[in-house]
Structures are given as structure tokens and as C-alpha cells.
Length: 304
Length: 272
Image (spheres, rainbow over the protein chains, first blue to last red):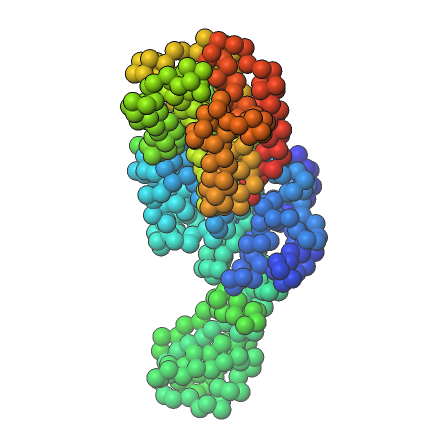
């Protein structure tokens, strides 16, 4: 906060963590700038959670260096907990503690907490304040944990599987809240395997596969990296010759479904298709050009 | 319910949901943990029964057996029920410290409650001291109940050396809480905590004279038992009840156990 130059708020270099001789995190390096939403995207077991748990100070790295606002999460654990709020993938509260009591308790842990009442209201927890933790639904527990991650007014918030267990409406509300959190200057670290969530929220995404970062870019950048970054689909008024389609430049794939044709490629492919249609005086019904989704890029960039 | 627009501070651009709390009258983390744990403690009626009611109930059942109310020459003319009040008093403290407390803490660890707390600035000692305080106070209240019921229902004289009795009881409680805290620190899960708790519990009952009053134990056995915190406590309580100041060796033994084990518990108790 007192830094004049924008120094990264999180620095991870060559992080390694091994369980039973298996490298779960195998040389991960990245930096996160203050105020950005940084996402980790990857399959289950790719090493996302272990990486963020090293940042939270929950796990001791076997190698490499982690700094959070210049602090070591293990050696300076208490100082880190004051500026970092965490929503863990696996955790619990005392089953007989009510929502209100939990919010009051966790507020008291921090030097400058948020007012929990509007936070609870925003997360739809107000009708549940007198309900015990053990009686909450999965989605309600999740929303309470999001509140507890934010309650200490952190500079950095780590959200592991943010919207797991939430219904679509609550998910969208939560995304809006996270955007507001970022807009107030907080850095957000997001672990997810929801493409839509990553695409909507993240400024940058690290794709993690088998303990390594395989790509690190903005959501747009990742989609553009994938060879089939643009998708064009239409129903031609008269059938098109397959060979003519196959000759299109930078074409990645062709799909016929009944009369509808779906092509993926680049902007060049799109232009070539349009000139082909004009030349042959074919009308393209229901012509749609769209960017490939992060989903497509993810599958292209992750070895299975 | 809450008018969120009024909580927004004019100097910040943060949305209302992220407004800071007012800074007045905020409890410390330690006080907040104690308050929350007290509420939770009172929501466990079975636990409260074992700590508060069971020791006095056991004493009362035995007190209803006629043989317990007859003067016994082995006990120097005391009745068995007279020797049993200090036993009930110590059972109260032992149940609270060694049976009740460790599984609470290990269950917290197992469920991930401690893991979640470890990502906040609160210290593990806040939780440990809240639990030790709650179980200690409840154990002492239960001990007091045994003394009162013994006096009113079975005409057992109150301790002659009241100050010495109270001091012994406080030292005994400290030693037992330290044992419980160490069990919670070392047990991997609540199954282990219950197992270790029982392994300590039954010898402890033996040492305080549940089966053979300490006064009538063979000398070799009595000498060994004296060096356990339980035996030392039972002997010191009996002396104080009879109007003598307890041997310093007993009080010293209790203090030593309490100090060493508390240090060990604090050293080993971890969130994870």
C-alpha cells in the first residue's frame, strides 16, 4: 500500500511440493499484481489448491520461494493472516455455532474488520443469522465462508472453488460481489475449474496441468492462443462442396450436423468463408461467428 | 433488515457491503473465542451431565448403601462416604479435564475448524485457554456440588482447612487440565483422544481411591500413587479435610506436574 511503484503483491518462484514422492507442484512461478483477479484453472489434482495453500501458509513448500506483500507465509504467518482472507476448499465451523456468532467471532480476529451486517445481507445470509452452521445447506455454508474470507478487510483474498455448490443465481450474485471487492482495490486469487467463472472474472489465468503452469495469459489471450479461436456456423441455401471447405485457410475443424456447417479457425478462415459464399451466391442462413470459449482453449492447451 | 446505504462511509469508494465496522466496543480475539466457546459448551447437555451431575450422583448412590455410612476402623474411624467425597471431587475435575476436553479439541481439528482458524490472526492458545478455563471452572463447580451434597445429604463435614483444600483443588485442576491439553495436542484424531483419555482415566480413578481408598493402600503402592498428580491430590485433599495442612511434597508434586505438562501442551498443540 505504501509502495510507489507497482510491485507484485504475490511472488512465487520455482515452487515445489511433493507428497509421497509424487511432485504435486513442480516448479511453479508467477507474480500477481495488486488489484487484479488472478485465476488458477486446471483439472482436479493439477496442483491448484496446493499452490494457493502454500500462499496461505497452510502448507510448507519443499522448494522455491513464496512472498505475500513481501512476507513469508510460513515465517511471518501471523502478519500474512492479517492481510490475507481465505476461503478454503475444505474446512468447517463448530456445528452448533450460529451464522451470526460465526460472523462476530471472525470479526474479532482482525484489527480492522468489515461491518458484517451488510456483508451478510449482500450474501443473502440475513434470514439465516440464527441458524447453526451444521443446519446450513452446502450453498449457505459456502456463502458464509465467502463472508468470512472478506470479513477481515483483507488486501488479498484467496477463493478456492468459489461457487461450488451455489445455484446459478447465487453464483452470479457472488461474481458481482467479487468484482466489487476487486474494484475496492483488493487482489483476488481464484481457484476454479469453471470456465465461465474464469472467463468472466479473471484478469489473468494460469492454466495448471500436472503441477506446472502450461499457459499464463488473459482469458482473451488464452482463447487466441488456441488454433481454433474463432467458430463460424451457418446453414447454406445449397450444399457446399466438402473439398472447397477443406481448402479454407487456417481451418481447424469442420462439422456437419444435418444441413448446418460449423467451422473453427481464425479470422482469416472467416473472411475466406464469406468470400466463398459470395462467389457461389449461396445464402448463409443463421450465420453465427463467435469466439471459441475458454473451454475450447482449455482442452486445446491441456494434455489429457 | 439492514439499510445498507447508511453504512457507507463518504470517504471510501467501497460498496456498502464492504463497509468497515465501527471501531468502538470491539471484543479482543481471546474474549470472542471464550464467548463463542462458552455458548457452544452450554449447548452440549450430555457433556454437562457427565461433568456436573455424574460425580455427585455416583457419590450419592454409594452413600445410600448402608455399609458406606458405618465407621470403618481401616479409615481411622471415618465412614466410607467421608473418604468418598474427596474422590467425587477429584472425579469431577478429572472427567472435565481428561474425558470431556480433549475430544472437543481433536474433533475441531478433524473437522477442519482449526484449519480454518489457522488462516486468521487468532492464536491457538486462545482456543486452548478458553477450553481449559471452561472445563476447569465447570469441574470445580461440580466439585463444589459434591461437597455441598455430601454435607447436606450425608452429613460429611466440610473440610477443616478450607484454604488448603481450595489450594489443593486448584493445583489438582491445573494438573488435570494440563494432562487433557497434552492429550489433545498429541492425539491424531478424536478416536485416539478418547483412547488415550481412557488409558489415563482409569489409572487416575485408581490413584484417587475409587476402588481402594488411598488411606488403606499397601505402603509400596501408596508410595507410587503419591507421585502421580491424582494420588498426590487425593492425599492432600484428605489431609486438608481432616484439618491438617497438606504435605508440601503433595502440593509440590501437583505444581510440578501442572507446570511441566502445561509447557508441553503449549509446545505441542498445533492447529494442524
